[in-house]
Image 1 (cartoon, rainbow, N blue to C red):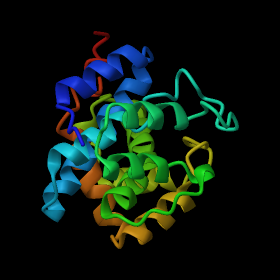
Image 2: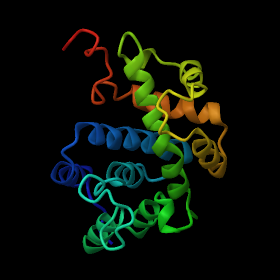
Image 3: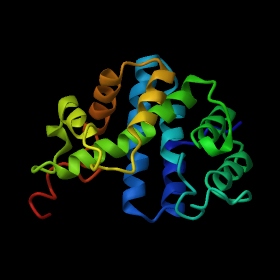
Image 4: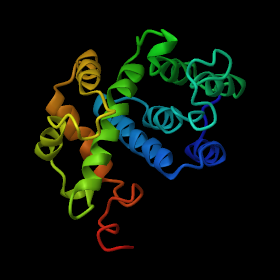
Length: 198
């Protein structure tokens, strides 16, 4: 087993992912995973890197029905070739429900619980007049949560189910992920610069 460094993982992201929005998603999930690792007393590097690479092959192989390379099969092969930790590989496999891999570890359950939620929180940041995620609150996220037309592709029931699977209260879960993302607002481009036309 070889534990990659954060730099090595980010180099892979830069090699495999050209989409700015997907890179931001990966950074958001990484931040949330690191926050949960601290909360649970787990390995922050392992958890953060798992979040950072969980959608590594999505841009190249978005067809999940492709039994050979469809997301996340290509990245799982790569991680095995690199001899990355089995726990990371298992969590990445588990976050793709179509793979049928049960989520047994806390790492796998956490990845699933934060993945879609980060997308909803990003969307909340973009519609704020300030375009600054640091202005957002759990209340503002919950307000948008109720609007079915807002970020309609994000399944709220799934987030609720995965949060329950993790054993966390939904509002506390939103608060932790939001705070983690607020900590990297500048990396996410949600630090107010968009409102200033920068």
